[in-house]
Length: 67
Image (cartoon, rainbow, N blue to C red):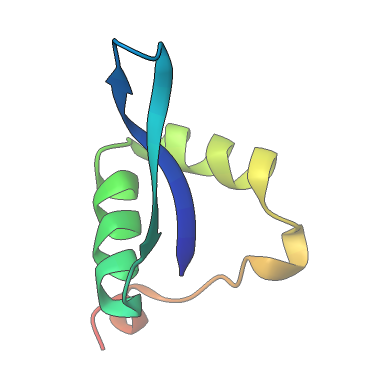
């Protein structure tokens, strides 16, 4: 996954300094999982409703969570 982000500020030129990151998929997975685990159930559900199409949310069993 490629993403461009500001990561510093150059005080002399008064401009943000940016980077383009090429993040491997296993790291993206870890970051996203960490984000969701910081939310409680209600917050996770709200985030999904506000940010994902219902067709992109597949309900699974508790056993499937840990396969």
